[in-house]
Length: 375
Ligand SMILES: *Cc1c(COP(=O)(O)O)cnc(C)c1O
Image (cartoon, rainbow, N blue to C red; front, side, top):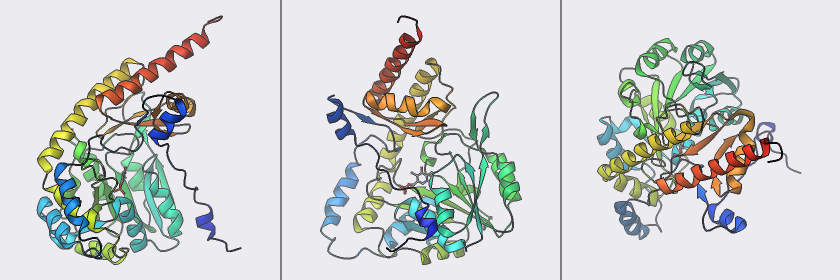
């Protein structure tokens, strides 16, 4: 038998998420809703569908390995030089490329925890040490849900090549603000790259939460990750990008690019999406309005929900997490539980969120009936 590397054997096996159509069939209900992966519920942008149809005729050719048109469009959009921009096959692959480019075995990667699930896995595969710094409460008496940037800066040592700051944080939705983030960047040594993972940047409404691409100016050890998967609605096509202040950082990441991994279709769709930014902004505004409504409705039901700056909300359900998520799934609502910790719920369309709220009410009713003697 051929054994995989021990680090790879120790990785969690892939577990596919529930598919709503299968779940609905299994439950014998008309529809199940998926609020598990932070996609937007809108269909692809009309301009994207058109661009895909046109690009389909080119798919017998390899894609442009340098994604020149997309890189130029992103550089123009963000007011940076194309040499600072690296498109990738989703921001997750750029995370992998960063670890490949910067982490030798024995080095380390620092991040807050709980945060994006990929970060500890990156360290494991790279043979790097994972430095996980616990979240702290963002408000008096609340659950631990926000970055402790002072502790994160203090945890960085001479071996630390990468620090991820997920802002807003997945899965808690909380965001760190300009003053604390600037203080953090000032404290991190120049030979450690700070990666601001801004997968949800487009949903930020708090003016004190800085735009990483502006914040990184003049700081050569800072880079920003963004994606077309969330606000831009291209999750199924796999395209994200890194913007680095120092072109040498971008160059290092480009060297670890898996050849042709950003497809012809992904490149064409991303360019078309960028040209439809007005429509994307309208969609984001609708998501933000629905986020407010959903947050208020969850608070009315007794959940301690922090203000989210992303397109999901976090229920700190602790020990009840697995049970509640299973009860919701039994009522046709697929969420993203993190056992023992909490449930992340994507802000869906209003009718989808109403299905969620009705399911929560049904679960609460059942619990109170069970708690009543003889009930
Ligand atoms: C969704 C997400 C990404 C990236 O997604 P891709 O689909 O790979 O572009 C990156 N970081 C965080 C924190 C995310 O939640």
